[in-house]
Length: 370
Image (spheres, rainbow, N blue to C red):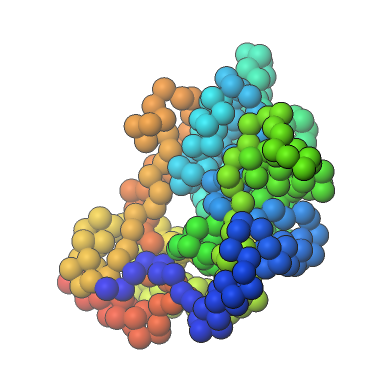
C-alpha cells in the first residue's frame, strides 16, 4: 500500500530515541526536552513549549488569550476539527470564516466584515484562530493588521506548516501564539506531539505550568487553578529533535513530490490549481490539488483499487454535524475546494518509485477518462 503521508524515521532518529531511554529520563521532563525547546526558541526568536499534541497547544493558547465560556472565537472553516474542538473545551462558541482562493486560508476581508458585524451587535469576540492549511501560510500580514486594529488576540494554527517561511521568518511566529503539530502524518512526527509558540517568556512559563497540572512552585503539591497533563515526554523529544535536525531534507522531499504531480497535471492539460502565497514559501506538507473538472471521489476510488491512498480535502467545519447551530460567514470557497480537491501521496518516507507508481495510475485514469 502506498500511503498518503506515512511516518518516517531514519536509523539516526531511532538511535536518538534509544539514547533518551538509556539516559534514564523516562518522565515527561529531561535534558532532551529542555534542549529541543531551547533550540526551537533560538530558531524562532520566540518562546517554545513542547506538548503532547497540537490540539493541546491550541487549548492552552485560548486559555492564555483569556477565552471564557460563551465567548465567540472566529476560526477558519477550511481546517481540521482540531482547530475548533478546543474552543468547545472552554464552553466558547466557534464562528466560522470561509477561505479565499489564493492560499485557501481565512479570507481577511470576510474576517473584517464579520468582526464589524459582530461588534455592531455587541457580540464579544475573544480570539481569532487562523490556519496555514496543507502547509501554505495564510495572509498573516493582513490578518495581523486586522487583529491589532480590533484589539483581538490572534492564534496561528501552523500545525501543518512547520518548516515553511513567511517573509523571512519561520512559519508559526506571525501571531501572538503559534502552534505546530508533530502528529504521525506531519513533516516531523513524535507519534503524538506539538508545540506552543508564545510571544513572551511569561506566557510560555504559564503554559508550562498549565501543561503540568498547574502545580505551584512549592515542595508539595499545591494547586490554585485547573491544569492538564499536556507536556511532551522526554523520550519523544529526543526522537523529534533528531528529525528536526533533518527538517530541510524532509521538506525538500515533499516539495519534490508536489512538483512532480504539478508537472504531470500541466503536461496532461488538466485544469489544476494549488495554494500559493507570494510572500511565503510553503512546506507542501500535503500534495493538495484543486481539480475543478475532475470527479475526485471517483479518482480516489480508482487509486484505492491500485493500493494507493488519496484523500479529499478537509470537509468544511460549517458542514460538520457537531458544529451545526454555530454561526458562519461564507463565500462558497471551502465548499468548492472540498468538492474538487484531492491530496496525493507525498511523505518523506514515500520513495521516488512509489511516486512513479502513483503517476502511472493517474495517467491510466485520465487516459481512460479522455
